[in-house]
Amino acid sequence: MTRELLDPTSERSPSTRERLARPTSLSGQVVGLLDIHKPRGDIFLDELAGLLTGAGAQVRHYQKPTFTKPAPVDLRHEIATQCTLVIEALAD
Amino acid sequence: MNIPVQRPAPLPDGLVVVVKRDCATCVMVAPLLIDLGATVYTQDDPKFPDGVAAIHDHDLAVSWHHDIETVPTLIKVQGGIEVERTVGWVRDEWRRLTGNALLGEALSAFRPGCGSLSVDPNRVDGLRARFSGHTLKARRVELADLDDEMEILFDRGFTDGLPVVPPTAERVLRMLEGTSRAADEVVAVVAPDLVELTVEKAAINAVMAGCRPEYLPWVLAAVEAVCSDAFNIHGVLATTMPVGPVIVCNGPGTRAIGMNSGVNAMGQGNRANLTIGRAVQLIVRNVGGGRPGEVDRATHGNPGKLSFCFAEREDDSPFTSLAVSRGCSPTDNAVTVFAGEGPRCIVDQKVRTPEELATVFAACLRTLHNPKLVYGFDAILVIGPEHANVCAEAHWDRERLLAEIHQRLQLSGAELVWGAGGIADGVPEQFRDATLPKFRPDGILLVHAGGGAGLFSAMIGGWVNGEMGSQPVTTRVTQRR
Image 1 (cartoon, rainbow over the protein chains, first blue to last red):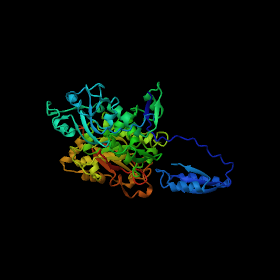
Image 2: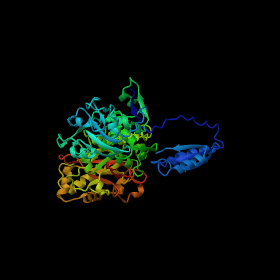
Image 3: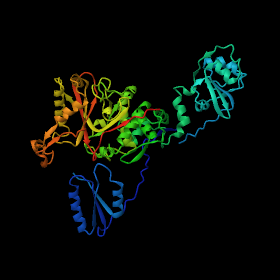
Image 4: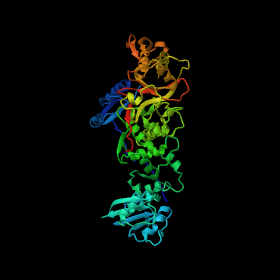
């Protein structure tokens, strides 16, 4: 007789998703910079913003209300609809 | 899922009797069944009773589906529906149900029956799995013949690093007997993956943790509390600090399920304490997806993240309990969850006055996380019975003791600013002239627990408090109805 156990997990079969192709150029891209609200994350992201702008990208800034909780759904939606790339900064 | 759905067949109209040979009462009434015109089911010997064409309930399906707990059971059926039954031999009842006023004249008026095979402790789990297993919705993990079930559970990442009890259908169904909540009821949404947790999934993890069914309501209450927005298990997991859910249990139910609030209350050796806390952590891991090295980013962690759960010693406490102080009644069963690190001992064996006690508590609590960090962290103060007696003799209650501790923890900003005392961390320079409290007003949770000997207490440091961190959450336990 087959022995069976019950799956204790969420049963989310991990589906492998293809990554988007890397952009060949930053020119014309809209890059979202998400500050998760840790100290000095803004300093890091401001540095990046300068570099990205210099490379021809358009930069948009976003911030999570607190780093301790997931980004609100609205914020994720906003970034997904307004940007072509996103960089999330962790700092301390 | 290979187990076919088993539906109960209706009983035939008329009289139905369920018997077994291994029952003296059944043997006694057996001669009466020859002319009774009843449909007779026999549980053990297919040839029993002599002279009756009995149906052998070989798989006990009839007995199971019709809730036969005692043999003999006499049932009256009309239109496929049971209208009345009597168990054992009660002559007047048998006469009334059969309409035969002379039935069993030679027999005594009463003789109790025997246990039905369908409720035999050695068979009941297997029967429940066979006849109710299809109600379980969880995906099945099939084991090959050579698979070691303990190793499979490790290999699949289902454990917390210690062996778990394999969650078979039999064990999970038995666990579900511990609650009257439906197996498919959603208990909570578990971070970080934000997955709906059903009672069944909680029961599977409770089995793995080693819980008894009567612990399940406590697991469900604790997991509800942990998954509340106020407690913020996502942040508690993701932080690099060494905290996890600390579960303090209150109410008469803690004694009923044998929880430990006395000697070694926060240590090893008590099944209820350890497995309730462990089940909550397994649920966060397996259902929520909160695993160390993934979302759990703790720099060091602490051994309490396997399980940290204990009961308050209420019977001889001079204080109102933690749950009562948080809005429950003394008769409520409740859990309070707190994002905490491991406990640290507070020793003062010379203390004789409550003022001295408040002073040593304040001195030790000041060091929590960093003597110069204030207001951002809560603490549980677990006062030992001998320390509590010092308060009781001076008629200090919970409020008085906490007020005296808070009063001693109003700190000078000059001692706390960055760099002061040669310690880099602290508060910004702008607070140099301020007086700052170590804790927010409700930031110390007092709990009475521990063994009767030892002028010791313990403190459990918390994580970031308030809206951006974790708030302690108290939830009542829904007992089986």
